[in-house]
Length: 241
Ligand code: URA
Image 1 (spheres, rainbow, N blue to C red):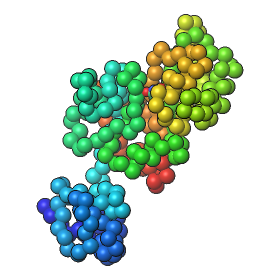
Image 2 (image 1 turned 60 degrees about the vertical axis):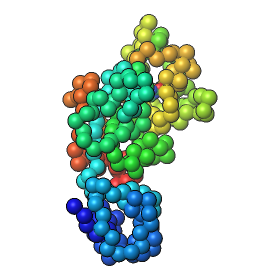
Image 3 (image 1 turned 180 degrees about the horizontal axis):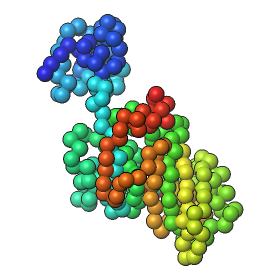
Image 4 (image 1 turned 90 degrees about the vertical axis):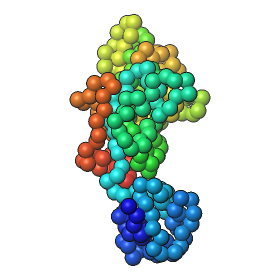
C-alpha cells in the first residue's frame, strides 16, 4: 500500500497535512536517505524509510514495547557472534524489530525493556532524564552503615563520580547480604563496579524496576507487552508526555 508523503507524515503525528507540506517544502524530509521537496511523492510505509530532520517517523501506535524478565545467562543483544543464547531467543514471537533499551550483563537477571521506539529508548538510557532503575544485589559480607552512605552519596569509579543513589540494606548477614539500590544513571556494569569499589563484590544481581515498571506477574524468560497506560507513564518519566 502506498500513500502520499504529506498524508503519511500527518498519520505519523508529525504535523497536520498542511503543515506537513511546508515541512516537505523546507527540505526537512528524506525518503530512503534522499531529500524530497516535491509534493505527492508516494511512500510505502512498510518498505520506505521516512525521516524528518534525520529522525525516523512511524505511524502512531506502531511501536512495540516489550517487557522481558531476562534470566541470567542470556546476552543482551539481538545477535551474538559467539552463538550464546540472546534475549532475542526469548522474544521470537515479537515480529517487530525491537532492540534492548540499555543492557543487563550476561550474569544479571531481571527487567529488560525492548522497543523500536528510538526516541524513548534514548531518553531512558540518558542520565539527564533520571529515570529510576532499581536493583537487588546480593553481595559478599555485611556492608557497614558508613559503606551504604558512601554508595548513596556517590563514589569514584574510573569513569567518574556516581550520581546520588538510594541504597537500602534488606537483609544483612554473612557470608552474604541483600541490598536494594536505586540509580538514575546506567553506566556499564555500574552496580557491580560500585560494590566492587567498596569491597563487597556482587554475588548475584537482578534489576527489579524501571520507572514504574516491575517484574510482577512474569517468571524468568517470560515477557509481555506494555499496556497504553504503562507506555504513557514511561514517556512521562522520560519527559516525552
Ligand atoms: N549494573 C551492573 O553492574 N550490571 C547490570 O547488568 C546492570 C547494572
